[in-house]
Length: 243
Image 1 (cartoon, rainbow, N blue to C red):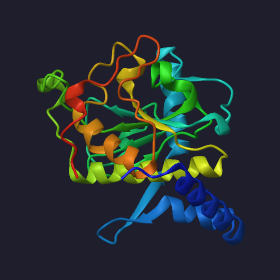
Image 2 (image 1 turned 90 degrees about the horizontal axis):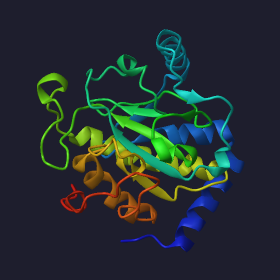
Image 3 (image 1 turned 90 degrees about the vertical axis):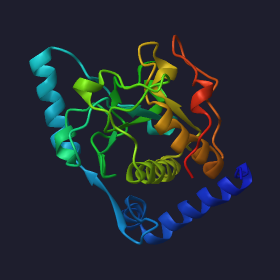
Image 4 (image 1 turned 135 degrees about the vertical axis):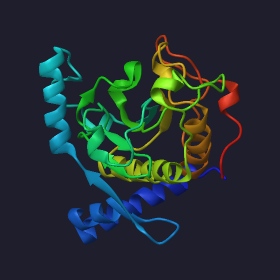
């Protein structure tokens, strides 16, 4: 069921009232440490310090820039971009410190934040300026049902823990944007902002998360849209949602 804009406004007002009554630190604790369906506490691991150091090292060694200097206005952020890494290093989030994304999700569904939202990362191509990025560990199938360089990068399948983590992260991002004076308006795939990213994030990630999130949070359906030279979401990705 699609959530009405009026209901979403009331929810956000309640969040802000809770923030005022309980204090920001406590309220953020509620947002970033939540209980999943099995009654287990889901925590977003903060790796921003070591990830920044790793990115600085990568820049020094490669001569490339992975983010724009200067800070973004948090009030202007209203989108989330989904990515697949195209590789996997297992469940330890510290093995992904060099990934230039705001969040990562590892193979066991661990969520870690690598960079502050005000950092303009060169991650999502034409979608960078108004979005937060999340990279999911794995080399997942593309529109043709095949894995890109499977012998080299592996042949992964999105698992239930990763789906749960992605859905939880959508809620976390929505709530944090409300605190920042904005709102989560839409979810995008990297391919929608770049012609070189045809299989990113892939049908498994898109169909498992986006139709659900659009209904749950009353988000704009971006599947037929693209920015610049990007490409819309293929029709084959829009069905087969995992409940």
